[in-house]
Amino acid sequence: MGLTLVSLVREHRRVDTILRSRPTVEGAGVHLFRAFGPREIKVVDPFLLLDDFHSDDPRDYLAGFPWHPHRGIETVTYMIRGVVEHGDSIGNKGSIRSGDVQWMTAGNGILHQEMPQRYDGMFQGFQLWVNLPASKKMMDPRYRDVKGAQIPVAKISEGVEAKIIAGDVAGVKGPVRDLVVKAEYLDVLMEPGKVLEHATADGSTQLAYLYEGDALLDPEDENPASQGTLAVFGDGRSIRIRSGASGARLLLVSGKPLREPIAWGGPIVMNTEEELEQAFEELRQGTFIRKGGSR
Image (cartoon, rainbow, N blue to C red; front, side):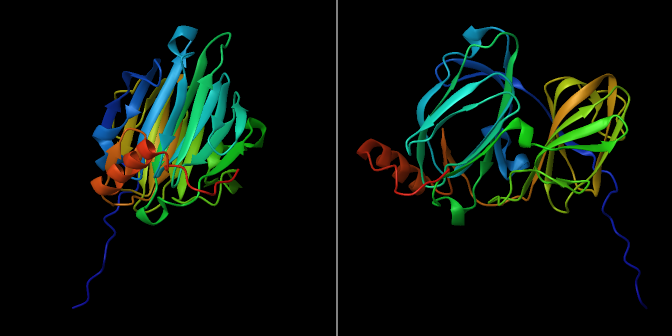
């Protein structure tokens, strides 16, 4: 007798995990809020870390992130308001200004510094870390610098629009392409009481970080989430989010899990402890930086 196969995949993804951003001090004394990090790597793969920095007190951010190494990851800096001066070991210098994005592939190794500048008002931005697969951890470093004016805005539905940093929404493609790990990165603005319906790729990790306002992140939940909430969604074909009375602004991030072992030592993320030890030994010996690297 023949069997009819019925799809068990949900139409709308439910929220599997809720996290609250927690106060953290990083760099030379920068006060920020960590949405996720080393504790959560099993549920956010292929992502590693998301930091939310926002303050109207320059003492919270001016100390910055002086020279430090990275290997095995990509760092994505997205400025909402303010300016960060950047410099690195392969001679690149520049400014990341309000609305700009810098997508840096550290690959086989880079030394860099990120120094926030005094800003009149709320200094605000995010840094996302994306893991690199084992086959690409030792690739040459590279940059994608994107000005805010280059980031397209797509209208998703009435009262809902998204800045598309990476990915393809409603036929509109973001400027960051040729990614090592295929990812989607959206900054979504929702007017009060509006609904976001967004299709998601099969098997992808889907995250939503609410950084302004309030919203129902789960289609079956009646309790709105507040600022600083991160939702990790389960399986399904789409996500459905409804903004609250004050509207909402949130980051939507998704990518295909790598499902590889992780050896994490501060700013360096490899696959084995031996690789991690080698990286720190190269730092001590002054051989960490390889030839290559581009902008």
